[in-house]
Amino acid sequence: MDSIKILVVDDESRMRKLVKDFLSKKGYIVLEAGDGEEAVDIFMNNKDIGLIILDVMMPKVDGFEAVSYTHLRA
Image 1: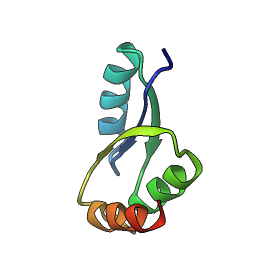
Image 2: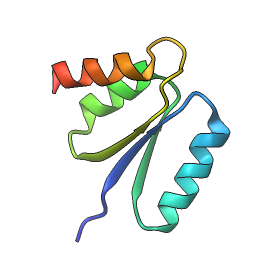
Image 3: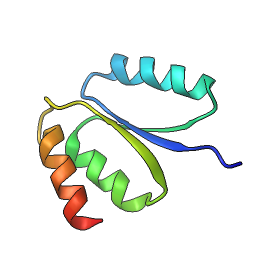
Image 4: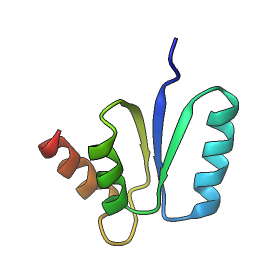
């Protein structure tokens, strides 16, 4: 079985690292983004993402905007 790809989005790198370390140990493939804008770009280039763990309060594009944008573009 292929590993599930998870996108972790948070503007705090230490939080991304914490989540990534935990998920990687469980066998998941983890992609990271530091803001909503970067998350949308990664999502658009990786249609096989199975789950997005998304912070809401971020610079540039917040979590709510990122979700609505990816929903419209998917």
